[in-house]
Length: 171
Image 1 (tube, helix red, strand yellow):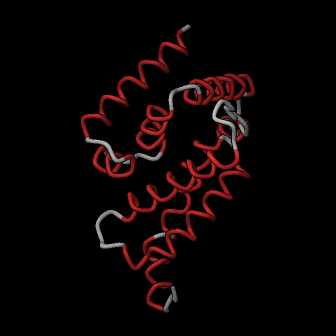
Image 2 (cartoon, helix red, strand yellow):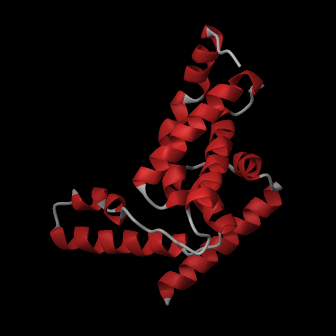
Image 3 (cartoon, one colour):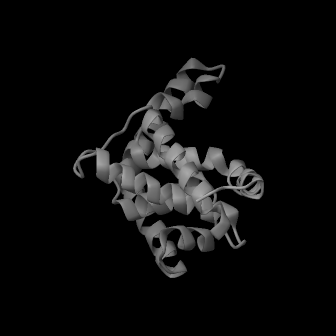
């Protein structure tokens, strides 16, 4: 398949604005930064190859679907299904570290680490839905498109995932 200048320009318009969100989703799925970078690179190649097939609509949902699929393909290829990788927890608390109060920063970092660890233990369907909604701010329709399930299922997974996280953090 030969790519033209139109495809390159379209790629820049459709995919590039969503790279930060793509990296964030890939990091949540893979559990660390280095693997997320590999996934985003693969997803960008997939998006470039398929850019001619993008028919409009939500470019963010289209890109995030590609990233999610690339991440799970990567996980199947390079990880044992029983391995749960929770790395880079320091990144979660970086904003808290900027606080003037060291004690508050330490508490915030510990809380953020607990929250990320709780989310990481969720089944993939709940975790993906929570990350897409609560971390990336996607609406229910976009999440339904990305995950390939009805909107009602998205809402159910979100509610059930949040209940599980609250129960884990309360325990």
